[in-house]
Length: 291
Length: 304
Image (tube, rainbow over all chains, first blue to last red; front, top):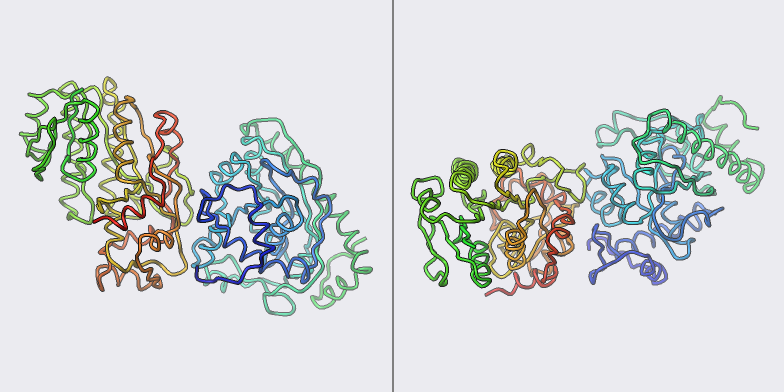
């Protein structure tokens, strides 16, 4: 393998404990590789434990086995929420679970990124992939705001955009519980002032986010996950748009409540929102004050 | 049962013929190429499937079942030749099947008809459209032949037609599309991409075809072997050297420096997987491959 990081034995032990049928080469039927997972989680670990000092609340709501859909808010800029959610379920869930992301189409066209995402079980966001993985009792990560969700500017932080309807129909079709969650801290780690769309197009991405510190690198801000109780909906995915929208509104309300609870907790945790105000000042933000 | 195999002299055709003879069937074979040491129980006819002598075989011998394997790839044939054999040949065979009372017809197609693309699903089911037609012009004739064979299901409802979309074969014969790609000591790949490859051992492929015939299968089915493996591992285990090239150089390098002569349309197949879901075939026939991925790769590597 080209980028063989010396992986941590503790991390590898956790990879071994994933409930995934690996063959003798450490590969499963989707091409997920134990070696790649161990390397990636070895790299993620210091970010998860120290750089973002991620804390999880309500992790017991995520099923220990069987299918499920983790549905939450997308943070702006570089989506550290995805990597941190993968890490949370890997490092803090017992036994560890692998989360499958539904990746935007452009990522699979990039060399190296395409290869690593494939080996880590992060597949292109197609309904075929979602249904297949759920029916195989895997855990899916869904950001129903879509890529638009990462394009949020700092002044719009934690405001949920419109949810797509696809995820709800897939959950019904595959009879999967939805576990709502809120990710707090991601917006402050990567406050987006504006987006460079032309440069993005040049790179094959939708845009390049620009934070006040100019480099598209997230800041070391404390982050938190708040998971809610699993939600089960009745149906088979062929329901009318009104019914689906009603279900989605329920999920949305739960996520909004989790975000609110999470942000209160987060502000206390980092000390009366000093950090948040500091960032606010530097972006000349005119958005309304919270609380 | 009397079984006619077109393209019998190919490696896969011979193996299928031998297996059918061993289980007590009478086998007739049509091919332009000879099979000098054909076993007893196999009656050979040297003919072109599109020509009159082939039709004579149908008329005078009246086979019960036909396994149509007389198709060619870009590795061996020109565009014109491919269209003549794959498309016109398939048409002729199905017409003869209908006209001369054949009760079951099996078309052995390829899983590559689904095509490789960045936004394609990892496991193709039979209801996915064969997209290779848009990305890989050298496969358009196979896509057309596949769909044409499938149309016999409604055109000739009295006949049990079965279209098999068989994944790459790999094994001691060292024949087939994947074997041609892996033929040299150095195998070109696209830097930064490592798609999954799905293959089945030569003998398992032949067994699957025999099962489809014996189970009287009707419809379109994906046929696959063991779990797919990344291309890098396939190259390593078959004892080749992986030469990753930047994508812009790959198409210029193909056919030179001892690299296989692949058309440009094949490049996506070096970047993205073509992996099929064979659940339906396994459920209908109870088929299980006997050779796992390691045995298939090693059989290919160490073949004399």
